Length: 230
Length: 153
Image (cartoon, rainbow over all chains, first blue to last red; front, side, top):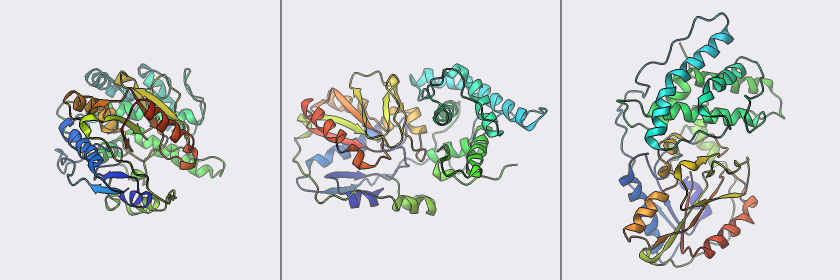
């Protein structure tokens, strides 16, 4: 925040107008990022400070235009399972199954993945989907075998890994245009059954109203309002 | 980064209410010309190698990131959920431009890239870093670093 920098007064600071989480600008735009980096390094030439300079170039506009960003193909519809809990589990596993080949493609193309916080390999994402579905349905299972954390930390690390899985898979689909951080996360939270489950889990912890139990930070502040769904 | 005006009002208001440290003065040091500067990155994005322990909430410790690291080994265990990760997921340079620094060094635009870089976890009370901050400062000095860039997230 520029307002914070004004008060802290570091020796040299470059304020940039980009979305939170993207200090060097949008991904996969090296020329743009290097220009930002050069502007930052250029502050070392200043002979007196503190210096607070504004980077005056906005991130390139999303090529998605005004259309909400979404997966190329629609996610699987809700299955006709016997119970709401079963339907939720099947829906989450169907989403994960749909995205799995795209996630594999993303890892191969990028040469890396942000997945890896839970200790559970990505091939076992269906187990993670079942775990999240259970918590969203009011159950309280222990994390799958191999989880490096215990509850409640395991819930957070599993959610983070699934977010990486979903977003990396979605970003690599053919014909998808580069878009903003907001649009990608809007799709995750508002359009997926996984996002719906996150709201259910958040609300479950909030309803418990135990001051000793802090709700897990699994929903970004920007999306704290639960959307209306069909 | 980001304009408060671009955020929902309640989110912006919460950020403005954050307690900030008070400093009596701003330290200042002249910097060498970039063409001879040895540059290091200090991140507060909660980055580390897969084999490293994850950051805990409110942690004031840091992780080492060697310049020769396999970039595929870098993951992020920052405890705040209130910033986008999709940029980092697609491109490490969005938060940790080590490859860009190495390119600038190869082009002679900076002197060299430090052998070691560091990441703290943001969203931490600064008083928890009164020992670890100077530790990293000492490590940077011993690495011959003459210009350190702090990249928040």
